[in-house]
Image 1 (cartoon, rainbow, N blue to C red):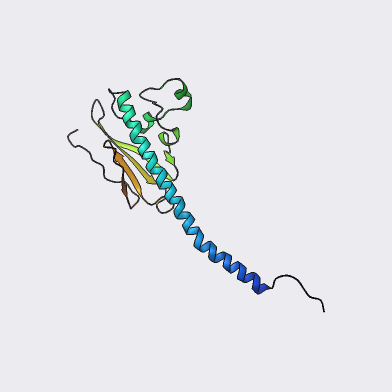
Image 2 (cartoon, rainbow, N blue to C red):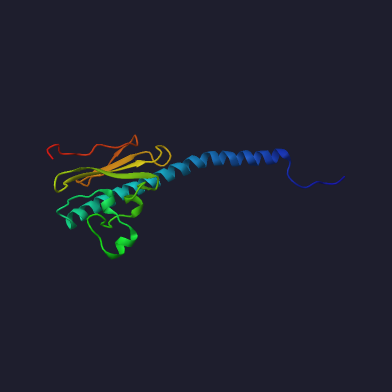
Length: 162
């Protein structure tokens, strides 16, 4: 009688079951790691927006703080000269629509004050809450970065007198 070499069906099923169990344990951890990386990137971008706003208001004191589109600029424009409408302080990825980077959407609002803008608020919200990120982040002219665990906008200070 010949001796056959190879694996039996039971042995193959056991190996496949073990691989599936390991995958079931590993995949959620990988997704959480990606969300944590996206959140870290969003906080860094909000910090960059704060720095860009301070630089913008210092460079263009008659304007004050600027809108998100004014903080960016087309690459061709940035190689020659910057202006109050295209200051070239942030990457075009976040300054132009759809204003998205690393699973988050960015915006600047609450531009208050006339003729010089003295208040702003920046906001970063996940594109898909629970997948691209869990928390929403915001900041204002104080430079403090806040978060909302629900993944939506968060409260920033605004002065109703302006």
